[in-house]
View 1 (spheres, rainbow, N blue to C red):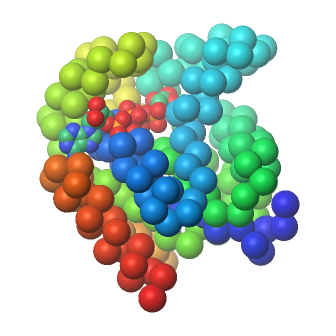
View 2: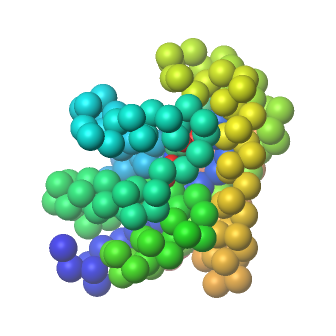
View 3: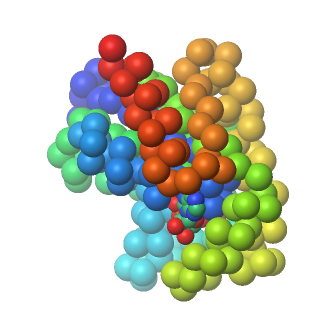
Length: 189
Ligand code: UP5
């Protein structure tokens, strides 16, 4: 896969901010392949690979899997898609994640969307989601909120590069999508 041809956009935000609700809509409208880091881990877990136990324990504790491991899953998904435009959802969640991505792929994102939302709203959304996710219980949600703070230096980094777009994710799904649309239109101008 030639790096120069690849377009990557990261979509980040706390647990329950709406990343996976918005990502398929963005992907469809703007012709991106949506790659969810969390979904890749859940698929790998289901496949019963040798890493299943590590993934399960890490997700149950709301912690992060090793950076190189996550990047390799992302690279595999990108390659298997055969496409060149990717919306990466829920990664990188720490500076270490970002360093691993940059080192292993050599790819710089075009820009980064950050969906901001209060913890109270996100907690209510996660508790209501009811999709049988093992990490949607109050104990793990609390740990996920704590772990999600490691993304802040990543956000600061992209802000300093002028590549960060902050989206108010407390609004309705349609309103959030409209704000994201505006960002994409401005970018493609
Ligand atoms: N909802 C969404 N938007 C709404 C809106 N505007 N108004 C009202 N309701 C709204 O949404 C959550 C719920 O809210 C849904 O019911 C939705 O209908 C409603 P969703 O779009 O799923 O939010 P999202 O931000 O995607 O929340 P998610 O729980 O998936 O985020 P997480 O970041 O916690 O989960 P992820 O799957 O990315 O990661 C899970 C775990 O994997 C992590 O905790 C970690 O252990 C591990 N992980 C890594 O180790 N490394 C990685 O790089 C990535 C993940």
